[in-house]
Amino acid sequence: MTHLDTDAVCERRDTTLLSAFGRAFRTPDLRKKLLFTLGIIALYRLGAHVPTPGVSYPAVQQCQANAPANTGFLGLANLFSGGALLQLSIFALGIMPYITASIIVQLLTVVIPRFETLKKEGQAGQAKMTQYTRYLTIGLAVLQSSTLITFAQNPSALFGSGCTSILVDESITTILIMVLTLTAGTGLVMWLGEMITDKGIGNGMSILIFTSIAATFPGALWMIRQQNGWATFLAVIAMGFLIIAAVVFVEQSQRRIPVQYAKRMVGRQMYGGTSTYIPIKVNMAGVIPVIFASSLLALPMMVAQFNQNPTGQSAGWVTWITTNLADPGKPGYMMLYTAMIVFFTFFYVSITFNPEEVADNMKRYGGFIPGIRAGRPTAEYLQYVLTRITVPGAIYLAIISLIPLIAIAAINADVNFPFGGTSILIIVGVGLETVKQIEAQLHQRRYEGFLR
Image 1 (cartoon, helix red, strand yellow):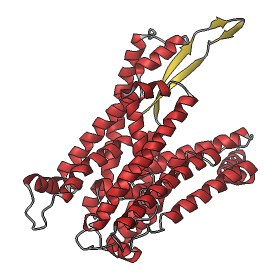
Image 2 (tube, rainbow, N blue to C red):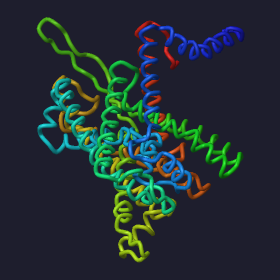
Image 3 (spheres, helix red, strand yellow):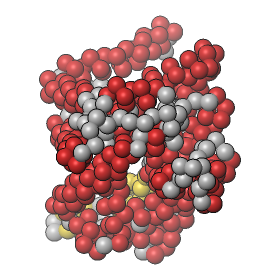
Image 4 (cartoon, one colour):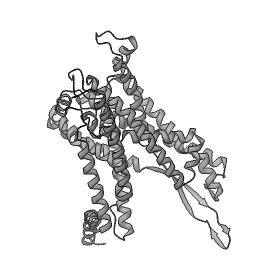
């Protein structure tokens, strides 16, 4: 190939990605899906700024401006709501009740035989599980909205000691209206997410979480610029690109276990004789272990806040928790946080991937791993590989999750440091999955995709 031909090929590859975006919008049905998704996202962001009845919006803004960074579960919930939680908007709870309900239902699948049976029933069973998740979401929304309003009645727990009042009226009627509004907001967010899944592009709940986190990026970066100057700001941007590249690399990494299916005769048809593989990702647990660890570490601090003595003399356990678990930049907190992430990574992978079940399914359909006998030896081999793949996956999650905590200690950045922890994992994961779905839609219409 001549030098001129090489330049022409490179030029065509450079223009393929740009032209693919143009083709996506020029395809009528795909354009409708993209515009529908963007419209739902705009509606969701609008609701994040509409205040709940009974809340003084100017007082909330003033308290937010003078508040310290919220760590732990409150910071995580505020991140997932796109900042709506601490604004006490109608979408204050965001998607967190649905996430919690989904995790609980998934964990109960291992414990409750009824749920395990539904999981094996295919689409009908999945629809029933989704219905249970919706009911549990509404129940959790009532509980979490009541807790949030309790915090709002004592706003120093949310915004620090400088904030004294953010509610216009604290009557029973107003409190009930606020609980009803926040619960209805959660139900509406859940419905918007399902609408994106049915009529838009990508997983609706994941898209809404992606939107909430992405909305906090500009403010977090600009705050770093204001506090530390342009040099630190540019260094954070450069480090962010490196972190994103590393996360993309690990999220796409997988161990492919080859599987061979023997030929078998069914009636007059010959089936089997094909080769495939079982993909085992390095990070099979996703962001769930980080959420578990953050939530559990925040619970003692929340309990301690309710048991603090106004006179300044609190119980010994309250003082110990405030001293050791209040500051995420301390080595003790980081070590405990890392240990919990590693533990929950192994725990979650163990309940979501069952080597014995996979081995039984392979044996039932005549599949085997070359060099490994079918049945129990296959299950033991899969468990062997899974354990060794999960170790670097757990270490990777711990390192990514510690980046915001290190940033707090190093440059006094906000706890919602954009390039680390749950934020970057969700941004990259949802972004990759959505691009793959758009690419699949383009391939179905015989167009070139995004990826080469």
